[in-house]
Length: 253
Image 1 (cartoon, helix red, strand yellow):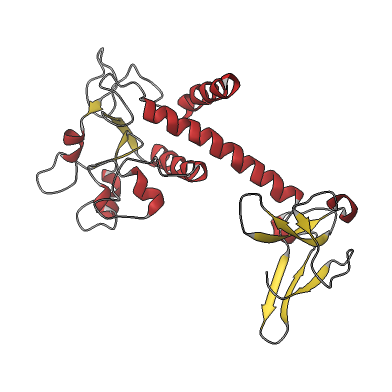
Image 2 (cartoon, rainbow, N blue to C red):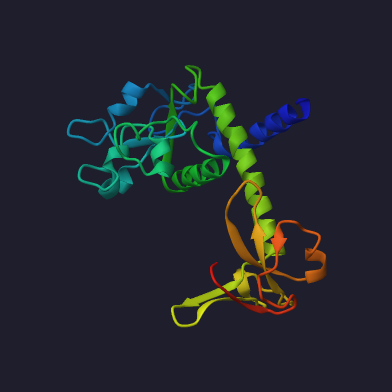
């Protein structure tokens, strides 16, 4: 338990450098920077930047960070495809695709670690493309601009998601995907090549079914050493296919 807590704390501190505003001593936007801290907006204040007639501007927030998206007015302004995100933090909708009133929320507790990674990819996009003008007081930041417990949990989920992503990428290199083909006349076929799965290598490999723990799914992968693969219980041969063949006829993928 202590080691896990230490991991979460280290992950949080490391990610804070990447995703929290770079200079906490400077106020964002066009406001004065004389001896003031980061700009903090209540949800009500943020809603006054929804791009509607008479509004103060055009802002949106993601994970509590507020961005001036006026230069993207055709997307976020009145009549724009993403106008429903203006003036609020609708973090969940970036991943769920639920643009109803219930879906336009900053409650991301339902997201998996992998989905949190995708959400932070969106955050990185806004950090690159738009001006960060402050923080929203509420779910992710306190009235003094400090990260809340909710943000700490999201950061921990991000760290877990990044670890899972790294493991998945390592597995894809170790076991590249097969080439696949299916036709009504010939049925299905899976085969390996030195470039299958988008992984260029100096070996071809043999097709095997890879079962992922905790999932009912199975995918075809190329295994370099068939003998060594015998020791992996998650790898199985295709029926009626020679163990060293680089191409197999299959009934289904």
